[in-house]
Length: 249
Image (cartoon, rainbow, N blue to C red; front, side, top):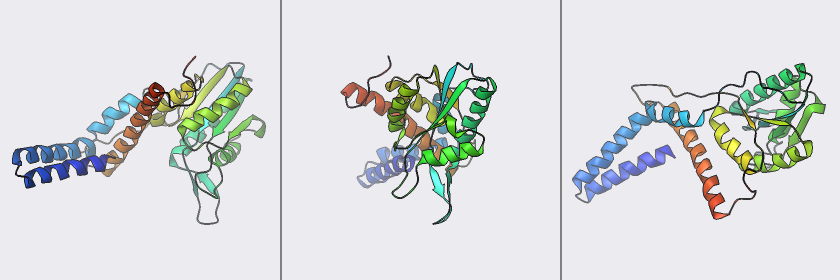
């Protein structure tokens, strides 16, 4: 997304110069130059992240009698062609945070279930929910406390399908565990399906300040823009009546 925008600026600049619009071409090329250093140097991704990572670490929740911790999938990977599946980079912190919260809840002797949400990432693969559930078991979460939602393919479906299971579980409190970058959008999607969850960020990303453009900052900007577009799409689709569900009540 970011590189596509940069390419457009360069193409417009070169095209304008080719059409003898030298001043216009120089403006577009200058914008492209500024864009490279503003993004690659960390200024743009830092500003974007500030608007997304607005929730603090949930060190000690106020546990209710009945709680459900929802852990969203973040990709799975297979070891070789015949090896086991494991959670991806963005899912590992979510698994650890889900397990930590579950331990804290059980220490208080409260009812605490962990709902893992995520379907199969490709044809023939296992579901994200199955992989996350196995890893949570390895971290001490009992089978009796695990609930799997293994059909969703994106965040909107995470919220939609999980809301059905949550309605049956009837918790007094829902904690939503996902990456800090993803949490704002996820909370809005769950709220769309009448689930008002307590935010529990599993990790926090940060841009790297640099005089030279870094590919990492471009990737981070891409991910942040994806989140903002997802938030905007929910609002636009709601306004047009295209989304399933019915907003907060």
